[in-house]
Structure formats: structure tokens, C-alpha cells
Length: 507
Image 1 (cartoon, rainbow, N blue to C red):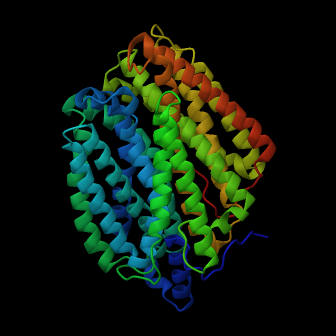
Image 2 (image 1 turned 90 degrees about the vertical axis):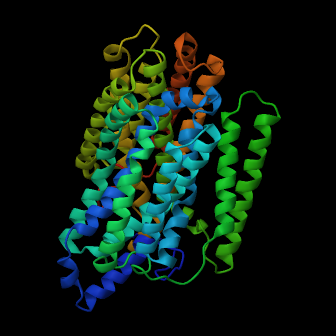
Image 3 (image 1 turned 45 degrees about the vertical axis):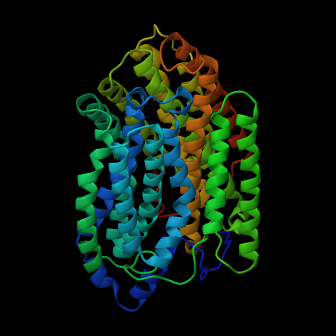
């Protein structure tokens, strides 16, 4: 029996769930036939916008060394180019889903796309480090508005087999975006400079925005509340400010060196803000209001442990990939385009691992695959920790990156299936939003923790033998973390198998 941690009429549920509810009612009244004949124009527009968002993270990681040299980033602060974006996306995704419920899917999607495009322009023109970090945070806000509303519009626009095809195409964006991003990031950075990885979003975003307003206004069905029309209720702005502020303070404290006031102050502030957030959400839920994160969701053991597994897997992967990009370019002397090409094999292996997980999940269950995935990630990190300034790519880095990719491909779908295994259909939007949030927050934490370890050992060097020593210690920590996660998954992670019709793949 699925564990229902809310009501079907709960005003706090995500845009995707509301869209499905409205669509099912329309189908019962004979409206499905017209919906089923909708052309694929809306899907193309929505997928182009989401593909741009997915690319952004990957191309930025490849361009990071060039950004650091150009804008004079302090070595300890360079990770904020990535972390500021991830924090905004993770902290605001649930707010974006709620905004789609209240403002309508088309309006929220268009607003998110406009914000993301303008912030891309600001990022590409940033005159200094602080300006770039601020622009990247606004980009994260745009992504947090765009992604949940786009998914809601897809599920509301297409029915039956067409919906399955549309959702499969949406799921394939993750792997395609990663593969394209590592290549595009290297080519653009080498040929046109790092600013081009942001500026390329501007013409694409403008065209997609013009197409979206026309296509979604005339053809798309409901997304969020309804396409172009709002719902009722209000946004939990207080909860959002407390959550994002607490997470930002946590990551800032982690990234500082030593244990003086510069680190303990932000960490103490993080404890206060996150505690205040939990109390505010509890009071809002008890008072019948719409909290940003309904705490009743965590009564589901599968959702709680699945989300934590997803957070840990993402943090480990992002931290290792970010450091490996810096190692390739700062220690082994690879150009940006060469680094992009050398990251392509592990990206492909990650996709193959996800495909294998989809094939085996029904037989082996999510726990077995999660344990195997974390074990492979640990083996990959330990292999990478052996790399030195004299190591070659083929024997020094590729085997470790391949093991990490294969493990990630197994671990991510396993955590996702576990998290959604006891969730009723009426709560799927909320559960999916929580898992997405855990994914992004895990990435932000991983991008802060492991570079902080490397920086502490290397004396904040970004190249040469000093960074190689920091890289080794950080990868040993990542391997130990992944090994511990394999043990914890074997002991504590509930085992689940996907329900018929459930898509299994990269989160």
C-alpha cells in the first residue's frame, strides 16, 4: 500500500501533480482526444530551454580555470561560480513549483526563461568575481522557475503514449546535456573565451522565449494551475529566505579555512537559520498554510532515505568532477577543449550505467544497485587519489573517472526509485520536487566540501605539485565517503522496485 503523506487536495503539492489531476478530470469528460493530437512544437520549445539549463552547469565546470585566471578569483572562492548557481537552484526549486501552481505554468516558465537569459548576459559581461557570482545566483533562480513549470506543462499537454514519449525525451536531456556540455564548454572556452559559455545562452533564450509565449499560449494545456492562469494561495517567502540563507551560510562556512570566527560564525548562523526554517515550516503546516517543504513528507522512510542517498551521490560526483577538471588543466596542462574531450568517456559510461540500472532494477531492487553504485564510486575516487603531476590521462585518470561514472549511473536511479516507491500519485509532484532539491543541494555541498579539503592541503594552489597533493587528499576523502555510503545503503536504505510504467533513469 503506498504511503500517502498528504491529501489529494493539498494546496502545497507540486505543479506536476496538479497538472496531472486537472488532465485526468478533462480526460474523464472527453477532452483527451484533442489533447492527444497536439503537435510536438511545445515539447521542442520546453526541451530546448531545459537543455540550455543542463548545459550551463557542465560548460561552467570546464571553463572554471579560465574564469579564475581572468577575473582574479581567490583560489578558495572559485568554487562559488558553481556553488552560487546550485544553491539558488536547489533552494528555490520548490518555490518555483509553487509559483507554477499560483501563476500558471506558461507564465512561470516564461518568467524563468527570461530571468535565466538576462542573468546569462550579465554573467558573460561580468567585470569581476563578485558580479559573476551574483549573476550566477540569479541564473539559478531562473532555472528554479523554469524546470518545474516546464515539466508540469509537458505532463498536462500530452496524454497516453505521447506523454510517455515526451517524458522519455525529457529524461534523456540529462545525459545528452552532460555529453554536449563537456565538449561545448571546451570548444567555446578555447576558441572564444570563457565569456562565450554564458553569452551563447542569450540568442537561444530570446528565440525560445518568443516561441514559448506563442506556442504555449495557443497549444499547451494546463501546467501548474493552468497555462496562463493562476491558482489560489500564497508563496512561502519566509521559508524560502530562511532555507536559502541557511544553506548559503553552511556552504560558506565549509569553504573557509581554519576554525576561527570566519568559519564558526557562518556555521553557527547556518544552524540558527535552518532551525528557524524547520520551525516555520512546522508552524505553517500546523496552521493550515502552505509551507515550502511540508514536513509530513519525511514521514515516508523511503522518500527520506532515497533523498539523502541522492544528495550524497550527487555531492560526491560533483566534487570529484570539479576537482578533476582543475587537475586536468592545472596539473596535467590540458587545454579546455582537451579536458572536455577527456571527460566525454566517463559521461557516456554514466549513461550506460543508468541504462543497466533500468534493466536490472526490477530484478535486483534499488538497494543492491545503490550499494554497487556507491562501491564503484569509492573505487573510482580511490583510483583517482593515486594521480600525480606525472600521471597520464589514460592510466592515471580515465579508469577512476570511468568507475565513478558507472557507479553514479547505478546510484542515481536507485535513489530516485527508492524515494518515489511509497508515494501516491497525488503526491508525486511534491516528492519529485523534494528529490530535485536534494539533488541540487547535494551538488552545492559537494562543490564546497571537497575543494575545501584540497585547498586546505595545497595552500590554495590551483596548479602544480601543491594542487596535486590537495587533490589526492580530497579524493581519499571522497572515496572514504562513498565507501561509508555503500555500507549505510546496505544497512538502512529501503529496497524498492519500480512500479509498472515508472521511468528509471538519471535524476
